[in-house]
Amino acid sequence: MSPQDETIALVKRYYEAFNAGDDETMLSLLSENVVHDINQGTRETGKEAFRLFLVKMGHAYRERLEDIVVMVSEDGTRAAAEFVVHGEYRRAEQGLPPASGQPYVLPAGAFFEVPDGAISRVSVHYNLADWIAQVSAADSAEA
Image 1 (cartoon, helix red, strand yellow):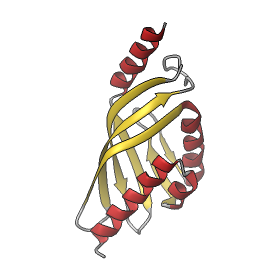
Image 2 (cartoon, one colour):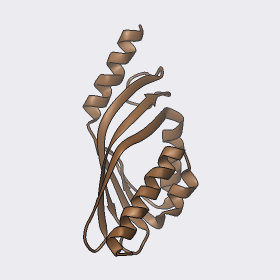
Image 3 (cartoon, helix red, strand yellow):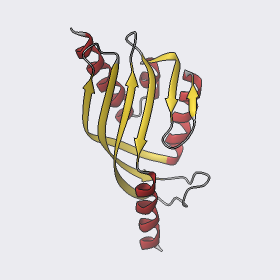
Image 4 (cartoon, one colour):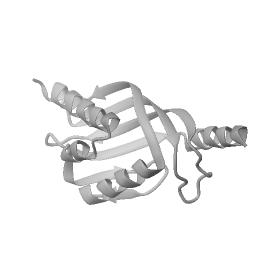
């Protein structure tokens, strides 16, 4: 299997684990010092920080990724994924609208570094203003 094919398989396993709610498998695919660039937020480093992020996200959101497309550099060290997030906003986060189970559908993407067969960087990007508009409109419609 080529380095490119190995990275495609790795990123697909990562997203299969995400959709299964299998945090431990996701974490097993990361390097110990993984760098995580949170959308429009901070940069965190390390598996433990990533683990805490997954727990926080699991409490606030229920999400499933669909239409996942993975693209990888020829040498397999860089990857990108595009997908559509189908979610439910379950618990409010500081600085964000109130949560009451509002649904949302949001295009998103991620970039990965994979220098040695493990994911060493995950950078996730989506349109936060679009997400806020969707959950705010859904919340207003329920009122």
